[in-house]
Amino acid sequence: MGLIHININVADAAETIEFYEQFGFEESWEFETPDGETRNRYIADETGTELQLSDTAGDADFDQGTSWDHLAIGVDDVDEVFETIDHYGVAKEPGDQPEAGARTAFVYDPDGRKVELVEPLE
Image 1 (tube, rainbow, N blue to C red):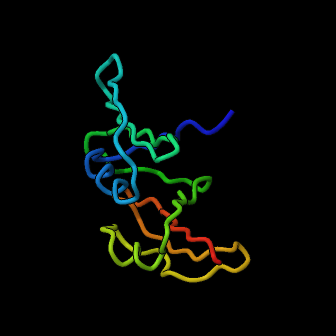
Image 2: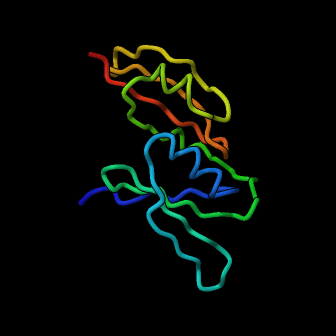
C-alpha cells in the first residue's frame, strides 16, 4: 500500500503544471470525464506519486476549508528554491524548524494553496 495521488481542483491546469514543474513534477497522463465536464491532468514526482489536477475551466472560487493546510515538497536548498521559483505569494519566509529537523518556507500555488518547501537540517 502507498499513496497514489491527491486530487485538487485548479482554475487553469496548464498554469498549475508550470508551477509544479519547477519542483521536478512531470505531466504523466490525462482523461476527460464521459460527460465532458472535467478534464483531469496528472503530474508525477520522481517516485511516481501524482497530483490529479481537475481543471475547472477558469472557475477559481474554491473553498479551501479548514481540513486542508498545505502540500510539502522536499528540496535540496530552501533558500535557493525560494529565491528562484515563480510563485504566487509568500506565506512564510525561509527559516529553520529545529523541532522538525528541517529548514522550511511556504509559498502559494496559482490557486492559493500553500506549498511548503522542506530541506532537512544536517
